[in-house]
Each structure stands twice: as structure tokens, then as C-alpha cells.
Amino acid sequence: MSATQAFLELATPAPAAVTVYTVTAARLWATAAALLGLAGAIIGGRVFARSRRRPGAGGRKGAVVALASGLVAVAVGVVNLAVADGGPGTGNGVVGGAAAVVAGLLAVVLGGLTLLPGRRRQA
Image 1 (spheres, rainbow, N blue to C red):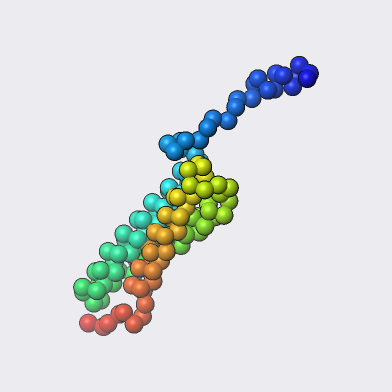
Image 2: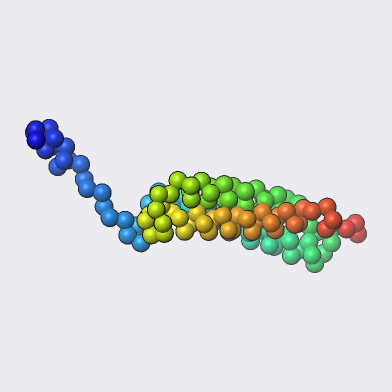
């Protein structure tokens, strides 16, 4: 072993073990996507409930926001799950990615149901 190799081994820090509480970039990215999907689902649920109570007060902007945020959350969650090289607890954001996909799909469904033409009634 040469002196350069020995120096590089000493200078390169050993990767720290990822625990359940370690915040990695992938976990942070997946959590942000899951929160975006959750926000879209909440907005979509509120808009959908409002349109059921009062016909004509559907809130097209809220439904579009729910639909867009749901689509972004699903896309980011699927990409995160596709690039993850381990299961839950490995620091790859698998749980957050799955939560983003589920919450995003819920937001897309609620936003889409609010925008359906058959749900609109002229008052």
C-alpha cells in the first residue's frame, strides 16, 4: 500500500449508519411529496364537500389545485420508489414515496370528481 492510498483511506470518512431517525435527502424529498399530496387531498375533499352541499359553488380553482398537486405528488412518489435501492428503514424514502402516491391519487380523484361535467347543476 502506498502512502497516497493510506492517506485517502484515512481522509475518507466511513459512511455513517442510517438509522430510523436519520434524515436523508431521499427521505426529505419523499416527505415533501407526501405533504404536497396530503395538502391536495385536503383541498380536494373540502372542495368536493362544498360542491355536494351547494350546487354551483364547486370551486373550480380549488379542484384544479387539488388535481395539479396530486399529479405532482404521484409523479415524485413514483420516481422516488423507482430509484430506491432498499426497503423501508434504509433511508431511501420508500415509506414517504408510497404515502405520496396514495395521497396524490386521492387528491387526483377528489379534484377530478369535482370537475366532472355531470356534477354541475345550473341553479
